[in-house]
Image 1 (cartoon, rainbow, N blue to C red):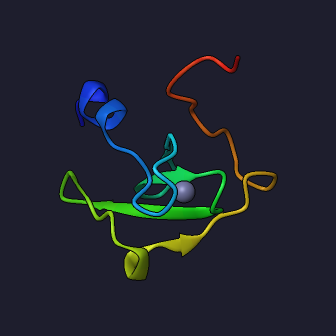
Image 2: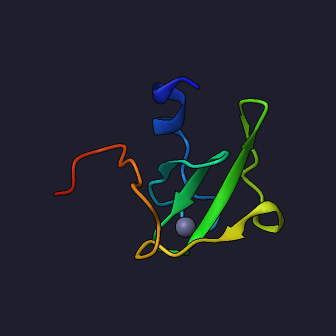
Image 3: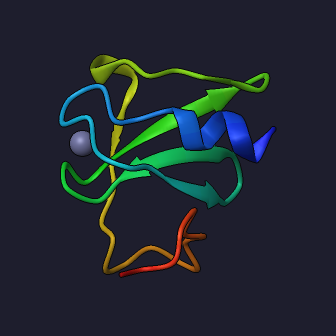
Length: 69
Ligand SMILES: [Zn+2]
């Protein structure tokens, strides 16, 4: 998936930045809402009812899209 495309995406709930998760399946996670939006067939499903609960503290090796400031 094109990283530039991911950078253009924001959380549909809080409009905040998303973190790309590389687990068994790709997902885009919002730290503020603690939700992970699945990516299926390369298409991010940016819908609240498709999102799964995500715990930033327990997440394994999240990949930040931008350096923390
Ligand atoms: Zn959010």
